Amino acid sequence: MRLSQFFLPTLKETPAEAQIASHRLMLRAGMVRQLSAGIYSWLPLGYRVLKKIEQIVREEQDAIGCNELLMPTIQPAELWQESGRYEDYGQEMLRITDRHDRKMLFGPTNEEVITDIFRKDVRSYKQLPQLMYHIQWKFRDEIRPRFGVMRGREFLMKDAYSFDIDYESSRHAYNKMFLAYCRTFTRLGVKAIPMVADTGPIGGDLSHEFIILAETGESEVFCDQKWLNKDLSGQGVDLNDRTGLENWVQTVLEDYAATEEKHDPANTPVAGDDLIATRGIEVGHIFHFGAKYSEPMNATVLGPDGKEVPVMMGSYGIGVSRLVGALIEASHDENGIIWPEAVAPYKVGLINLRTGDDACDAACEDVYGKLQNAKIDVLYDDRDIRAGGKFADMDLIGLPWQIVIGPKGLKAGIVELKNRKSGERTEVTLEAALKQVGA
Ligand code: 5CA
Image (cartoon, rainbow, N blue to C red):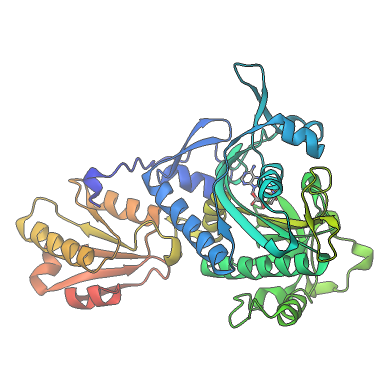
């Protein structure tokens, strides 16, 4: 993409409404714009990152055999009256009335809809287990939308749902999802610590929140410092080996980690310097709630003994749009964002220091073409503006690599290659620069 044709409205000034770095940087880098409190438009740069995160989340759900589907955003109130949550959900639910005076709502989550899908088509334990997910916009009329996309009213969530015949099987589904979460966050380049958590309006007896430690996070959290060096990549774990997987999960969870609601200072196995008390960002939350929805909604199957039993369920969320902000919170400096390569909107930023100069234009076009041929995402700053502005924008939007081409270097046959993360700049031949970025 050529920057002269790209909609990238960067801001020099710090927007007054932004209280934390990620919100500031997302506005300054032209990633999002607020339409209304907690409701954002995703501009081209932000949308590219959102889609990359979504794709990694999707691949790891697919890898554990979870089926992707897509449920509507607008749901009928009757389903929520059946589960008993229509009144319970309170003011966070955006309620709508259609032209026939039917009560509808904008879905804050999908337990009721998926249970309805399930009960209409699944009759026998032989059709179990089932694992399904979608990646869809949710609406929660949050009392205090804040920190940009971190606590929005409209936000993108991956929510998955499991259906099993008995507790052991549903526990296995929970473990599979636990593994998928560890793998997802590792691929996204962040450490998200699973912590014992409250279940809130989703309900259930077992739940873990996946939390990225950050001073600007909304939740107060407590964990053993051992978590900082723990390998959560989940490599080599066999998801079909029930016992092996359960043992792996138990080993991961050996060390203390709890959210504020579950933390009991009088009963904490770690103390002193070993206990980290800080804040964190909840990027995922998994729940096991047994028959909480299947019972009132009659989602039953015939068991091996011919008796009808309600299915055991769990639900598993990831805050896809929140992750965009969370990744920036975890990786930025005073000049801007530093994207991990896996989610960077482009891998390489190509800077033409003198647009209009024949030699510079020709060299840049050549590099641009070569990177495109090598299928490397490149953003080419071909704008006719001062070099200082180009450097500042490129640092701000945080692409992993910058290739800088100017008239002086060209004469000597060299370009500058900058690594955004380390800040290291090297003068190299064009061939060496291309090789370094993978072309
Ligand atoms: N049905 C369950 C799991 S599928 C559920 O709704 N869980 S949740 O309420 O914990 O939400 C899942 C994830 O969505 C959270 O971990 C968080 O990362 C994200 N999330 C929740 N509320 C918001 C919000 N207001 N803005 C942005 N992300 C949010």
